[in-house]
Image 1 (cartoon, each protein chain N blue to C red):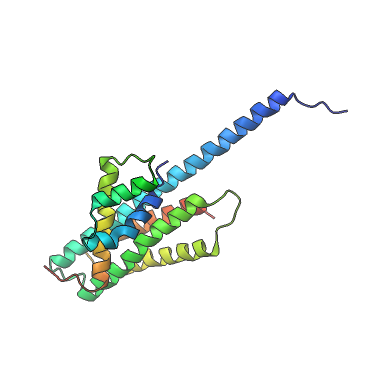
Image 2: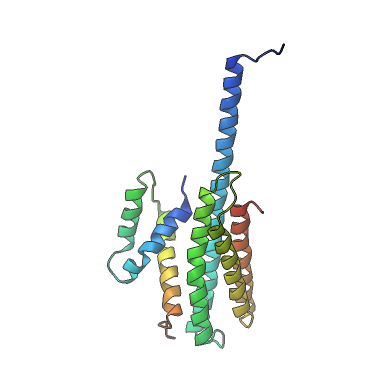
Length: 147
Length: 70
């Protein structure tokens, strides 16, 4: 014959588990919030530096490169938000949707392209392009939990 | 909970209207508060919203080839 624990003990344990789960979710959401802002601000700093060089008539970027960078940044801004928003809505244990996987792949490709386009830029701009890639990857890892 | 990505998503959706001069940043803030009445828009968030609007607008202008050198 088995002994059942008192109902009150079970209730307290359930509440504790629920509180822990909620605390965990809040923490993940806060991390996504934070990573989203860091990624956005990193891309924005790269954009400001690139645009400054363009308007200062520096050899880099050319008009064509500036146009390409603008197009990729515009997409990246949208995807940084879309990926983070999807991450906020992900349920524990539920796999990411095909759309989110596609968006993550595209975002990774875009920041890689931005770094390639910045290869001929002055070192501080290259460094910022690299930082933007790092910060965007950090957002992706936060959203996917490293999977 | 701030849910910054959701707010930035709203900002980006409204960005073309801001660029077109239809609405200003204060209208965007009001729109956000209408869907998130719990949200207190402090100076830091207001600055981020303005920055997000400018960033997207500048990127789109460059992408269209409309950003001529000074």
